[in-house]
Length: 186
Image 1 (cartoon, one colour):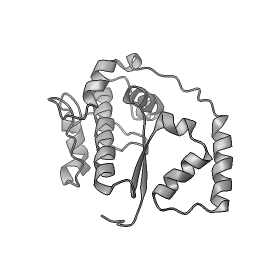
Image 2 (cartoon, rainbow, N blue to C red):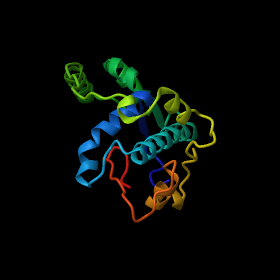
Image 3 (cartoon, rainbow, N blue to C red):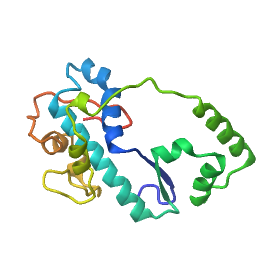
């Protein structure tokens, strides 16, 4: 609403990879606040928060349409070449200049050599594939996070995520975690 002519690219990764990857990446930050990333309340709340983001990707893509919102699967992104990326940008009505094409080519070459040393697993955080599949299912099931991502004051409130984002309510005075900027601050 604030940017009516803006176009967006949403990157979506398999939840069974994304959830433990994100949890693993915030380990140090969570510890800096005296918490453990392995705390079941944090794990569950964070997984639910990512499921909410997943639902928002779908809803915004459907609402804005492919001319304003492109969703790219992470695995697809890894195998894209310059013409694939240019097609995504052109699908958003972005004209790819020769300078843009050069930058895309350089970035693609650089990214092909990158190898993450980041290691993680669902079981490390007490999660199962079945739980993640259920949580991220398109249907709003009992116990799953609300999938509406309409602008609503209750969703902008940390109190909402503390009491509704975890399977058990956490009292406002108790531990609160801070996630990285790719996710959210609670």
